[in-house]
Length: 219
Image 1 (tube, helix red, strand yellow):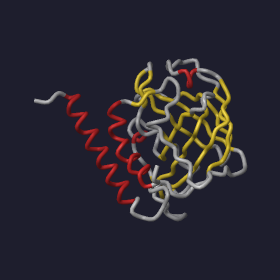
Image 2: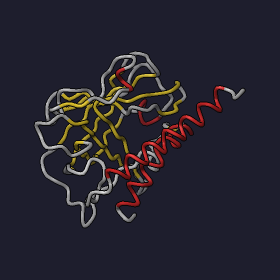
Image 3: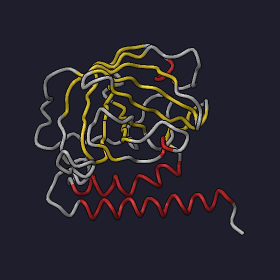
Image 4: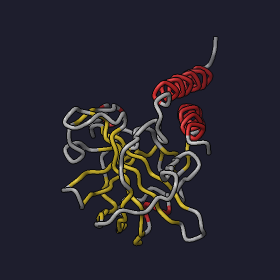
């Protein structure tokens, strides 16, 4: 009989293939981005003030201010007012010529709904989470975003099914960033923030979909 860890490995790999297949279906349309095709990149300021409860992940625990890039989008690209899964991507410079990417999708905040994609008509009505956890010293860690309005958002973290801890505020500024010839590509598998790590099963789950997306862009 296979061990639970072996079954988890098989299930996560199979899930990744399903995500990859879904991305290939969507990428059949002529677009540079098969998922989240429409959206503009804008500048923002992310102010981190930490929390008394520590995660062991330096970027979450330390105070600081980051000049970031932010992209809001709709997953399938359905025209409003049709409901769609809303996405939010944040690129954080690390000061070494490198950067970390965070990707959020519309979900809930409950013990189960934080792991469940939810379609919505407005990007400001639903919370968004990273959907899959990061490995951190405190345990499996999920991040979320809550919008006050179109320019002010709160960021929080939770370990497993635990309570949410607010650690940062994101203020989005006016103005669109020139992305050049190809749209900016956010990749949370390749670009991870200090103190956060992707579980092996998360990489297996996500990588087929991201590989297909990169291939569709010719990157």
